[in-house]
Image (cartoon, rainbow, N blue to C red; front, side, top):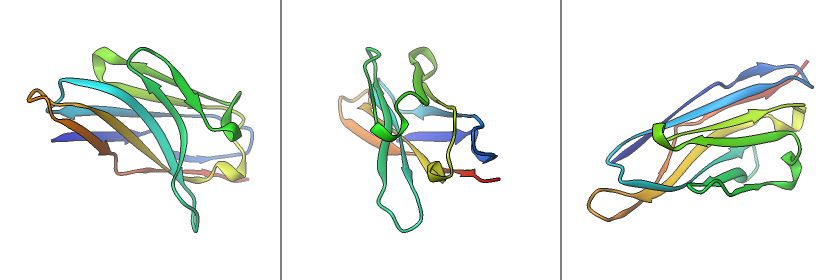
Length: 120
């Protein structure tokens, strides 16, 4: 099994910044991609940003230019730097990882979620 532990959420004023971290551990051979999703009350979970092991990134249009995803492959850790935060960024943010275990089986794992609230 693969566990993802997130940290870094909290309450911030509009225009402020937060940095989320997510560390993967467990039966990991390789991680193909890691990403951040978010779910606001009454809405579906949506992709915020993703990054491959090679460093290719993908962002939701709503966060382009404000959020930056990065990754430390040696630590199996992904980060999300969030700048110029807006009230509409308020949501529970979930980390996701896809990869393979030492037995060659693919896995897809989710973190427990971390709350981000943007409010004055």
